[in-house]
Every structure is written in structure tokens, then in C-alpha cells.
Length: 184
Length: 197
Figure (cartoon, rainbow over the protein chains, first blue to last red):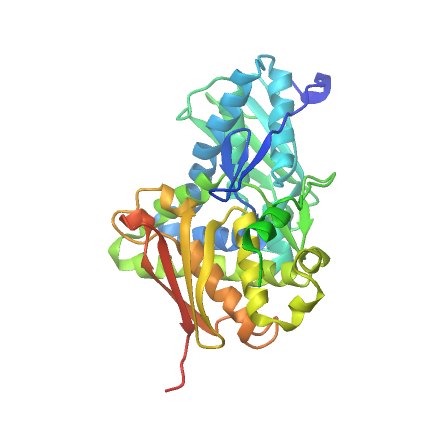
């Protein structure tokens, strides 16, 4: 179940409401922000570890991005897993979060990021870090996994970042599993 | 005098495009185009988790994130060819025009429908925001426009503080009205952070 077999193209309809000064991508309001903003939100989450800040940041991303992917699949009749995976990868890039590649097997998977806005933005702002920082990416991976396989948003999915660009790796790697199976 | 609507329309047509790496480098920074609801959702979650003890500190960090965003991105924008193309070559020498231009970008980027309603160079700026995504959330009867606050004081720094990159922090911003609290518009008053009596 990879995206290599899919030629489906992510279709983006962008609108700007000049009356309300709001941007929309496929009907969802979006806003342009820079890596300083994302890095400082991430730093705030890291500083608030005692309040589960990283988990809250990941949750916020997952809860926001899941319905967008789900609605896209429904509205565009994207039913094949390989097509869904490809759309998720293209959407991730389209909104500037980087280059992501999913590989899934039953109840497990991996996500490889060759480029990451969050990691590379952090590197640009502060340099390398001793801990991972891509909680927004983690939330996206959760949202995509749930949407691709029609899981419940509160499904027990474990996502573990095992390599991280911000920590010096050439690419970031996330291992995904649910129902007790590890990605291999 | 800036034709605000035309400037906003012109700026909104400047496309920031993703490159082959899935990244959006523009104006000296890296940009992303996430749903506005994501920023609101995390802000709400972290403020709820902070509770009363850490509420003020968390609010300050949310505002600071926006201030740094506004300062660095704002500088990249105001020194860009696109900015000069829309507003004319004279804009670099016109601090008030520059600020009005930055608020046209503010609108065009989807941050808010906001404009300067009063400006006293170096001393004071009042901004009104008639529509903004930070008002879309249940604010628990508190002002919630940390992004507008941070970016507004950063823009004032770009116009009237020490030259970039040493000017951030020269101004502070207070939100005095908010749509999220039932007002017709948001009001933001920017003044020197450490005024000389």
C-alpha cells in the first residue's frame, strides 16, 4: 500500500474573500504563517511538557486536519488506499509542511519526511535540538492514518518518531501502529 | 495616500508557491498555509491546560510568537520587490505609508480585516479589526487576539524602533475590544513598551 501506483492529483481550489480578508483552500479557511510562528508555538508546547503541551499540539493538528482529508476523500470519491495515501502526501506538501512518504502494511506503517517545515524552520531559527519537535507533523500523520483507513479519530494509534531532522538525521521517520502491530 | 482596497487586492494576488521539496520559502522566511482553526485550537487547548496560575504567561508566549512572526516576516515583506511594486519606490522613506502598507499585507495574508485608525509616529497606533479568525473560537469571555496583538507591536517596531534586526520589543500592545467578547470590532492600542515620562 504505497502511493507509487497512484497517479491521482490533489486538486486545490483557492479563494480569497476580499470582504472578510479570509483565505480558503477547498472550502477550509487557511492562513499564511512563517517558521518563526510555528517554531515558537512548538517551543511553547515543549516548555509546557508538564501540561502535555506536545500532545496538545499534536492533537490540535490531528483534529483540524483529519476532517479536511476525510471530506476530500468523500467529495472526490477517493476510495483506493493508494490514492488516499497519495492525496495525503500531496496535501502535506501543498500547505508547505514538507515532503512526506507513507508506507503502510496492515495495521502498521512508516512515514518518512525528506523535508519538514517544522524541523527545518526550527534549524533555521535556533539550530539543532536534542529532542524531537515535529508534533504538528505527528498530528498530521495521525489524521492521515485515520482518514486513509477509515479509523475512528480516537482510535488507539501509536506514532513514534524514531529519526528526526532537527536532531541531525538526514530525514525524519515515524513508525505507526495500531492494534499492537509495529511497522517493520 | 494609500488606496487600501487596491493594495490589498494587489497583495492578495501575490502567490507564495510550494517548491519541489514541499516547502514555501518567501520573503526571507519559510511559510506554511495551515488551517486557521489549527492555531485557534492549540491556543485554546494550551490556555485551558495552563489554568489561572500560568494563564498570563501562556498568553504572553502566544503573543510573542506572533510578534516574532510579524517582525521577521514583516521585514522580509517590506524590503521585497513585490512590496515596492504595489506601493511605489517612495515607500521606503515613508514610515506611515509603510505601516499602512504592512496592514494591507496583513489583510491580504488572511490574518484579519484590520486597518490603522490612528497613528502618532513613534508614540501611538490604534488598529481596528473588523473580522479576524481569532474571533471564531469560544474565548471564555476573554480577549483572544494574541496574533493581532503581537504582529501589531512588531509592525510598530519595524517602523519606529531600532533598525532590523535589533528593534523587536520596543512597543507593547493592549487589546481593548474584541469581537470574541461581543464587540463590533477588535481594538488594539500600541504604545512604547517603556515610555519616557
